[in-house]
Image (cartoon, rainbow, N blue to C red; front, side):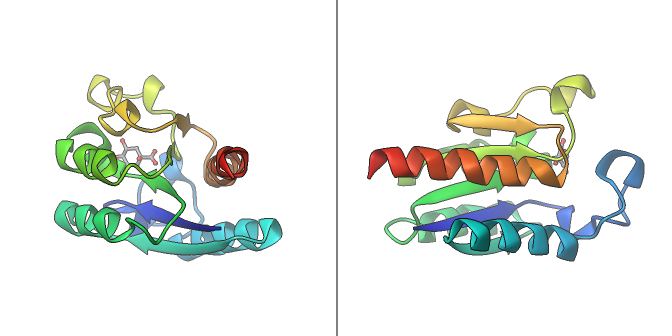
Amino acid sequence: MKILVINGPNLNMLGIREPDIYGSETYSDLEKCIINKCSKLGIDCEIYQSNHEGAIVDKIQDAYGTVDGIVINPAAYTHTSVAILDALKSVGIPTVEVHLSDISAREKFRQFSYVSLYAMKTIAGFGFKGYEMAIDELCDCLLKKQ
Ligand code: DQA
């Protein structure tokens, strides 16, 4: 089983960026947390980060036929990107959406997610732990499909 974890804009700035909201751990700490979780579950994992909407669309399209599931934190594109929503719908790969912060309790403009119109589940407000929860959720779903 192979999953793809996609992180959107500014998540590479974790540790520096608004630590009161996103915590003091770095992007490299997040990568380690994801790799550790996937190795415990015995699944292959690729982690991808981009600050560019089109690059994320390309990555989702490239996942067609090569990846069993996607975990995505689209970051700011969550609230704006019909293109990322359409890319996910195009490939039809099971997807769980994750956010470090609880977007439902933040500014009004963060409370709507285009990606949630496709994702099987949205996990928000649990920090790095949310990625582990998202990977568990995705694996459970993929195993049921086998
Ligand atoms: C975020 C929430 C978004 O609103 C924000 O633009 C981000 C990060 C989160 O993980 O909490 O960049 O997706």
